[in-house]
Length: 166
View 1 (cartoon, one colour):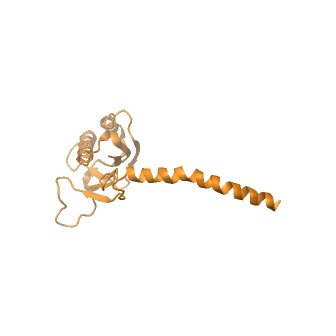
View 2 (spheres, helix red, strand yellow):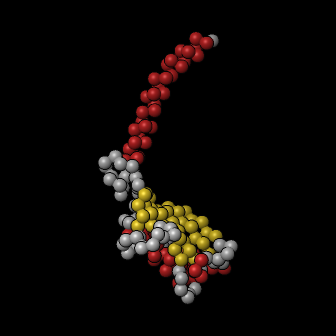
View 3 (cartoon, helix red, strand yellow):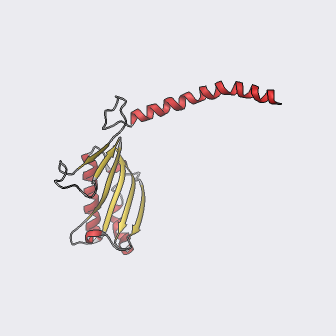
């Protein structure tokens, strides 16, 4: 019985090694494809890049970054609307800002994968959806919507963040 096991292991090892080669090669190709923004085609790993609307970094160290790219991924921090208005005006403003941020790094609303929506109250859910619908192309990303227990900072009725690809 033990000789059958040894024969099996001896024959299986070369097969396993050959089967593993495409996985390793495929993984390397994927790593090179994700090099956007960090020397694509030069085999360098992706790196974190912080982008500020309007150009350079603020004079003081910011609390958080508004836009971060990592390889071909784009992360947009929560954007609110800090002016008097209803949920439709606030949602429209926030979505316009998100679109501007995405385009500033070479992405678009159609390339958004994940959206988080934070409402001041669930009473605004229908109004937010009226403005939200259709802004992400024919195949919108996934979305989570919640009402923030203590409200949205800065008296905004809505705050939205997202993750996209370039």
